[in-house]
Length: 152
Image (cartoon, rainbow, N blue to C red; front, side, top):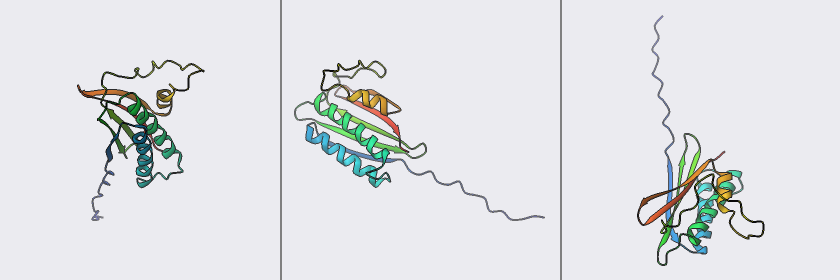
């Protein structure tokens, strides 16, 4: 018996989502990066009170603070870029600053902070909470510190 069977269409993959903005390389810019990242994640479907939003926002906060403190050049901004890949639910967080000469240690080589230090734990949090992270220098004027995290 012959039957007409309509070919099944493969579902279109969800598009990759992007969010990019430039902020002042100041503590205020870092704080704004954190708030805007939380808002963008909420818009993309991860509510403010979700674990995914909290983790991603913490990662943005740590990288943005480093960009404002260690990557600051007077008169130059830093750039925040979020890229969500729906096929594997991965969020890539990138912070680009104007100090390519100030590179952080490579992943896996971060020294433990002294118990007496009030700072120096940001990249340890990034290394612990993200699936992987690193630094790239695409031109002689900037560096990008990035990390990726699976949003579940």
